[in-house]
Image (tube, rainbow, N blue to C red; front, side):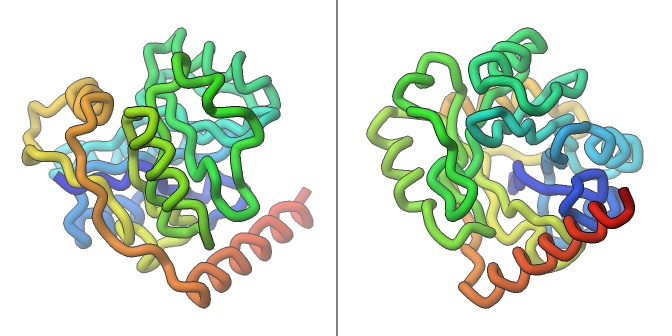
Length: 224
């Protein structure tokens, strides 16, 4: 089962992707599980889950929370978690909801996590070892996960309804079923059953993507 655990929709300040189009494109690309993890809210995730009822894809209710020390992926949560809390408090709030704590792009270009990860090993569930959108940092993330026997996820970090969705994925050793639960997928992640797949964007692709994100941020700022 191909899973992309890091996608953004128009409910993120730097994205224009419609949640329904994300689901349609994900299915077209052979994905069977996605996490729409918008910045600061869960609206895209919930909208996608409602739209995907009856379709052969599992939607993980998620959010990318911007803590004071960097972004934290909150997978399988019930309620949004506010930004600008400390990393420790953010993790604690995810735990209170029995969510899964993942540090995305921990060593990524321009988005590295600003906290000593070795001091959080007993608090987090894993890290993102392959992010298709970063310029660098994936090799270091993979090495860190291996060195500390950490669980891991993979994500495209797509912000638009384009080829980035499903550009990278985690391949889990079972097929989608209507009876498949999100909890089962989370346990598979924690058990390190997945295999990374896909491609990292080349420099030009990443540069264009980040440029479009910046323009989208500017539009959002102007609207305010």
